[in-house]
Image (tube, rainbow, N blue to C red; front, side):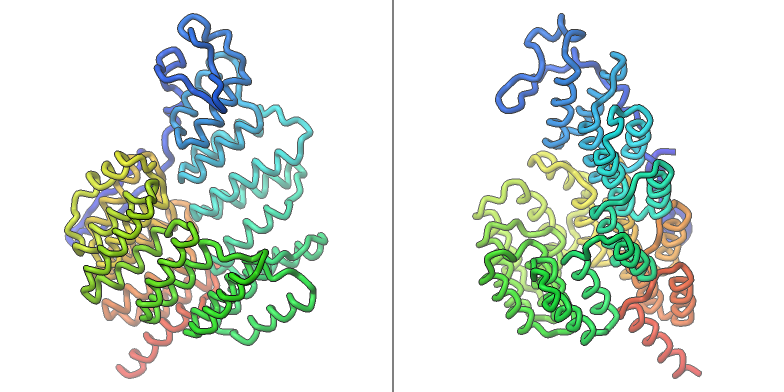
Length: 502
C-alpha cells in the first residue's frame, strides 16, 4: 500500500497509513535516454557518444557518477544508474553503497535504504573490510533511529552480532543520542556501561548527553558535578559540553549565565559556537519571552556566517506573530535575503507566509512547488518545519496536507512528523484525532518517544480530559520511556485538578 493519509469519521479523525516507498526507481530509464552529461572535478564521467558506447562504460565511472548524484541531491538519478548497473550484471562498490544508503536514510526513505543495505551485505565486495561493514551498519542504524523505528534498529544490531562485527565509537554515540532524545534512560546507561566494559573512551559527546539527562530530570546540581568531573579528568571542554551547559542554563531560565558561556566559547580557540549553540540560545530566550535578545542572537549568528535553522526561525517568528509584531517578522526576513542565503531563502519566505499571515497560505502543494522552483530539494526536515508552522496554530487540515505532499514526494513520514500531527490536533482541541495518531505510531513500527507522550498528555489537558493523563503517563513508563521534567509537570497539573474535583 502506497504512502498516504486519509481523513475519516465525523470528527475528521485522521488515520494516516505508512508503508515503504516503492523500489520502482530501480526500473528507471536507461543511461542512453539521458541528455545531460555528468561532470566531476571538470572531467566527464561518461564517453561523449554514449548512444553507441554505453556498454563500454567502465563500472568505476558508474560508481563515481552515482556518488556525485548523491552528493548533489539527485538521488532518483543515482537509483536509475544503480538499475542500469544491475541490468549490465554489476553492482555498486562498497563506498557507493554507503553513499546511497546514507543519502536515502537522510531523506527518510529508510525502506529503500534497508533494501540496498541487505543487498550490500549479501553481494557487497567489501570482503574482509570490517571497517567498511561497520560504516554500512552505522549509516542504516542512524537512519532507522532518526525515523523512530527502534525495532528495525534492533534488527540491524542483531545482524551485526550475527556477523561478529563489533560496535565502534560512532555506533555507541548513535545509540546514546537516540536513547537520550527518546527518554529511554535505562537503555542509555546500559550502553554507557557497555562502553566502559569494552574500554571505549567516554567522549565529550557522551558527557554532554549525561548533562542533558540530569538537566531534563531537574537535577541541576548533578549536571554541574558532571562538568567538574570532566574538568578533573582533563577532558577538553569542547562544543558538545558547552552546548549542554548552555541548554541546561536556558531550560531553568538562567539566561545571563547561558550568555556568559557563549562569551567563553567565542574567546576559546577550539570550541567556537556552532549552529547548535545559537539554536539553543535563541530557543530558550524565545521560551522565556526575551524576544529582543533572541532577535539580537539571531543576527549575531548570521554575522558569523551560519545559516539559521528553519525550526528556530519558526519558533522566533511564531512568538513575534503572537504579539502582532508583523513588521519585525518582515524585517528579519528581509535581513536574511540581504545576506544572500540563496539555498534556504525560499523556506524562510514560505514560513513568513504561513506564520506572518497566520495560516492564510493554504495551498501547501503550491508552496512546496515554489520551494522546488527555488532549487530547494524537499527533505523530511523541510516538511517537518512547514508542518510545525501550521501545527503551532492548530491548523490541522494544512498540517495534514503537508504530510500528504511529503508522501507524494516519496519521503516516508518520520516520528517527528507524526508528533507534529499530534500537536496540531491537540492545539486545535481535537484530542481523539491526536489519540488516533498515537495508536497509528505504535501500529506502524515506530517507537513513541517522550515527546510523543508529552504532546498527547498536553492534548488531553487542553480538552479537559484530565483523567486520561495518568493513564498515558503509566503507558509511557511501561514502554521503557523515562519521563522528563515536562512530562512530570503535565502529570502533576492533571492530578491537582482531579484532586480538586474530588
